[in-house]
Length: 108
Image (tube, rainbow, N blue to C red; front, side):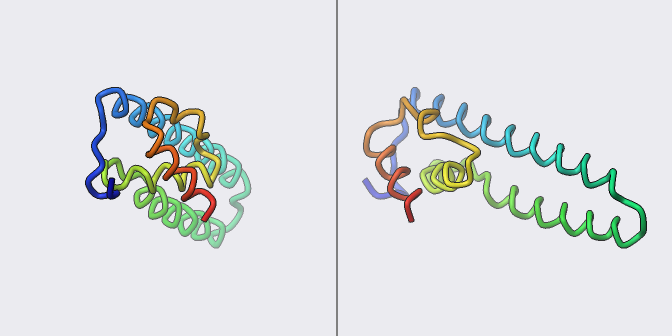
């Protein structure tokens, strides 16, 4: 199984979509909390520009990270597990080989 030609069963697609959505929601909710905290500290114009820069960087990071193409999902899941937005347990239902690849990539 090469990573670009991975077949995903209907069950795996359901598990993958659920895990993907959970991780995305967690990261977005965390970001919203951070923004709320940071906006309370805005006192001067420089603080606004710093917040803008922070949000621009986060948008770039999140938009680049959450790619739901099946050819990328193994890498996406590995990154999300490494960053703590997803646990390997939430990927139960994927076949053993996919789980092994995700696990191996989290150790790199």
